[in-house]
Amino acid sequence: MHPQSETENNIPGAVITGATGFLGSSLAASILMAGGSVVALTRDDSTRDDQHGRTVKAIQAAAAGFELQLPEGFEDRLFVIETSLEDLSELGACQSLLKTFTFWHCAADMRYGYANIEESLNVNLIKTSELYQYFTTVENCQRFYYVSTAYTVGFNISIAEEALHLSPKLINAYQTSKWSAEMSLALSTQQHILPVTLFRPSIICGHARSGWTGNRKFGLYGVLSAISFATRLKSRSLTLAIETLSQPNYIPIDEVIKLAMILQSSDKARTQLEVVHATAMDSLMSSQVRNIINELWGMVIQFGVPEDRYSQRINRSIEPNLPFLNHVWDFSQTYIVGQLDQTYTPFTMTEDIMRNIIGKFYTPGESAEGSEVIKFG
Image (cartoon, rainbow, N blue to C red):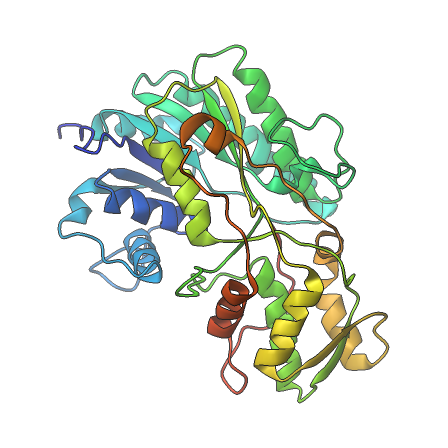
């Protein structure tokens, strides 16, 4: 098989881990829509449907969620490799499938508890380092993109710059392992010529227009699922242990992908190590989000100390995320505009966009997701 060349749009192909996930499938669909080629790495592509595997289905669903239809023949530019990433020699096919490509590492261990720190470090730090070391030997690979989290800044900095944070206050295994991977990659770029981008999304929510979430349980939807659970308990009054003036940073998936595609398609000279925030420039206060939920769902949500058993039950389900909810997050976002695309306008979350996202997620009386603990990042 001859390697796929760059398209007339000069967009390189991409090798993507986590291509069945929310961000990975969205990125893969967008690259295919732009005429690029994708090699998707997955542990298990099996499905009950003999026509398409899990990866193709996930990417098609992502395109539909973006209100797009993949072009005819996209399958000729999409290659799926089943691999556990234990034997990296299995990735040798990437060189024969794509003439030039970037590597996007979207897969991650998302668990919070420090009881899982060893496995979190194995997946998020050690495997990331092994993948980087492997692709330094692959001439076709142009850049290594690591999908980290904006919350590697920690809780002890008022304004988070697009830079490495050397002494952050971290509170869970996910943050700690992601931060460790960033440090490892930064050091590796001093020894190898393969450049690295640390891509840091904040709390990713659904598509700004369609509301599509990929049926994933994450971020904002952990809180919404818990509250919708309260409506099924016929409890319209709820007290949450959230600070009124706190500002979690929410960004729709389409805005995250817009930034990713600017990076993917750029032909400008770039630094060996770049840090890019995929965050909202301006975000809503928690009280504004609460008011929208009250309006749409007929709730009476207050912030304070939960005393009734329904409120206590709901608060327990969101407790791991409360430190992130009860903080004012201020992320600098200057790299894209300053270095790659002066026409890019940083995203501002508005009440109208949030109202649409929440409204598309759940309407009282309909089926909603359960109230299990959901992770941010």
